[in-house]
Each structure stands twice: as structure tokens, then as C-alpha cells.
Image 1 (cartoon, rainbow, N blue to C red):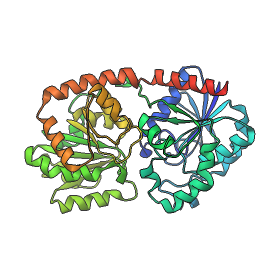
Image 2 (cartoon, rainbow, N blue to C red):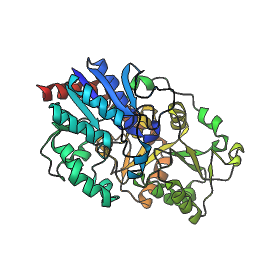
Image 3 (cartoon, rainbow, N blue to C red):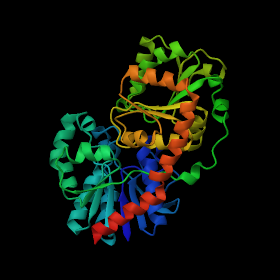
Image 4 (tube, helix red, strand yellow):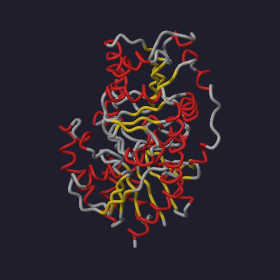
Length: 410
């Protein structure tokens, strides 16, 4: 079975968050289960080490990074990814594949791929990855609503199926939009073998010595309004009243200069912060700050941060899955998430973390309760590993998706 995966950005463009990791893990799993798979993407967010418009081998996967036009970047936060070389390749190569898997909605790559799939009668599956949630579509609706009516709705209508990564996404998208396509609900997965050997405790503290002896609350992901980071910051004064040793670590790339909105909130609360990329104070152990912005952390440093943290926090207003949540659980870091995170129901079912209403009071109350309850934290770690093994092992997930693809073709 020959599958073409088309995505606007791809590994290792980590600045674009969890979908980059989850899609790459899925593709490796599909190949391990016998599929022939190639990836067409753009070189957005890539270093110069990959030859543009030529195929590269990434972890055994054939990936072609097509050049894109930066003149169209005004159309979105990450651009529309208009790529004439990609268009040409689709016209000549698409007919060689049995099925096309399209990631994302609001971009040229999905639109042009869906168009040629229809022209050549090639079945395709769309995976919106949270981009059709009402909270997302209502943002900048002045351009998304007409785009949906003119283009995106047709892309979705002609898909043989839509792949959702959680029941929450299915319920909040498929039924709300009244879609008639077949729905495939299969979660993201993780390569658990990569977490069998973890960094030693204290490695991250060596990199950021001002965090020594702190109980670190970790947020890791893009700095975006929808992640609810503002609620984490606003809950911090109450947490500090109960535990002066707490430190909020905010790791991730800034999106649309949202970090500066967060800094204004921090200043209004009379809290102190530092940015490790530029602040000379970070070299001093015991610096009097309660919040640190690290910027982007690579995979190795991300694991180190998780190992040295006390709790992982994700207070998203909208989150179709929550890839960093399962990565934290794999690092044996207890998680506290909002009920808006797609896998919240599984966390509750397995008692593998704490799920809360998304408010500052709920965050501060539950963080304080957990920090004072080591027995509960240990139980969460055990249950989280059970959940990972039962639901999110990538080989089984890839096998299920491949079976779905074969059934669609037949």
C-alpha cells in the first residue's frame, strides 16, 4: 500500500508543536507495519541541511521539502505555504499512490492536494488536528469564515474520511459541522522505547542553576492564547502564598509576540521573571524570580526539564489531543490539565493525572493540594504508565490506522 502524507510543515520543524512529533511517529509506525510512505511538505522552519525540492531520508522516511513563497506569509501566522514546486510534483506523482493523508486545513498544501486528488480520483483522508474547533475558527473569523465556505468545506466534503485524534475532537467538530464523512477516531501515539532510558535527575538544573531547590511547575508548548498560559501566571501568587519554593517554567516558541502580553500580566501581579536567552541574571543561583521563559527546548533538554520538574501544567482553552501531556507522563512527570484537553477523559478514566475546570482558582487549589501529597503524585505516575501502554503505544496505533486505510481503499 502506497501512502502519500502531505503536511505544511514537518520534522524537524519543532517550532510548530506537537503535531510535528505525532505525525513523524505515526509515519514511522506505518512503515514498520508494512506501508510504503512518502512525505510532501514545505521547507518552512527547516535548516539549510536539507536539499530543497529533492527527497531526503529522515529516520527511514522519504521526505521532500518543497520551497514555498514567503510573499504569501501575511495570510496566516505560519503563512499559507504557497509552493509551486509542490504543485508540480502533485500533478506528476499523485497518481502513483493508493491513498493520501492530508494534515491541517487552513493552507495551500491541503487545498492543492485535495484538488488534485479529486482530479485523479485518489482517495484522501483529512486530519484537522484541532483546527476546526469552534474556538479556533472563531479567531480571525473575518478570513476563516469565507475561506471555509469557498475552499475548506469542499476539501472536507470530498475526503473519504476524517481522522480525529480524540473523542473530544470528534464530538466538537464532526457533529457540530454536520459532516457526513466517515470518522476515524484514533489517538496520537508515542514511541515508548525512547523513554526507557531517561536523563539523570539534576541535568536540567545544571543548565539553569537559578532553579536549584525549586519545585518546578512546567508548561511546555507554543506561547499562544489558546494554551491558557495567562491562567497559569494569574494562579501563581496564590500558589506562592502556600509554597514560596515554587517556580513556573515556561518553555516554548513565541507565537505572534504573545510572550509580551504574558510579561505585562506578570508585571501587573508584581512577579519577577527572567528570559534565559538574554537575561544575565540567570547565571546566579538563587535569583529572586518566580517565572522563567526558556524559549524553545530541543528533545533532549525537553526530557531533562520534565525529569527535574514537579508538575506538568496545560490549561488550554482548546486542545484536540495534548502530545506534550503523554510525553510528560512517559517521563514520569505528573500532569494537571484542563478539561478542554482532548485526552482529559482518558486521564480521568485511569486516574493518570488531575483534570480541572479552566480557572485560576482551580489551578492554584489543585496545584497546592498535589504539591502536598506525595502519595497521590506517586499513584498518578503509576497509572500514567498504564495508560500509555494501554492506549498510546505508537506501533498499535499505526496498525489500527493502516487497517482503516486499507478498508477505505477496498
